Image (cartoon, rainbow, N blue to C red):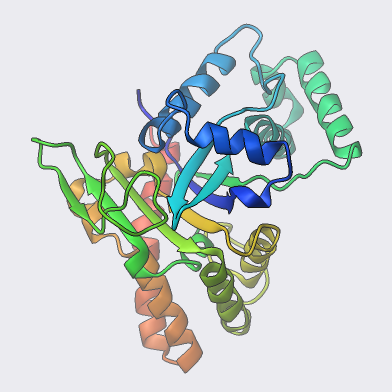
Length: 306
């Protein structure tokens, strides 16, 4: 199965942060042998989505919310990141309709089905349900603001599989919070994991620096701006203060060869760029920023490649 060319920003909350009965359900789920393991979960998510969308008519939004989640363990605490497939599907479809002309949208989803989906979403909103998913998705690139919450030492890189050039760097267990030896079956992946406290602090420290040097505007959606950092900070602020934050390159790792992936130091380069801005070292800032853009713009360009 070819994974979607997308990256993911996930928040894992302590299981104790969930109200009952969800707390008990997630605790039992974490110990279940039947749940998708972290190393396979993204593939399972993608398979389920593909089956829904290839139906006739397509199932744009599942009838019920997913009962699956990503799970991590750290210091005897279970951390859970619910898939929230139904909520994320609604949000994605709403963006799709906003970004495309009605005729284009109708070519993908019949208008009667589209209206029914949005009507259901309207009822969900009116019921006062949360619209803050635990998972953000970005296709064809990692947004530059997603690098800000992390540090270089929080990186975990795995390349290949055993017997085929498998290598590893700063490996973590499938379900650990960023410490300890790897125990899961290896797979090609690049992730960063940090605490919510560190993530919020780094975003908060970067915000005035970016606002002073790059401004608040959105402009090019692929560049860094104070507006996007503020949005990221608000999203992080809606979760438990002891949560974990994970950046997963997801299917994007298959757009880079081993050498390029090993040399990817986007988080470290962003940190140096921000330090350069803060100190008024324009040449250093520009050099790091150019490195980031040189890495990610060719990846983004693949979206429209023939």
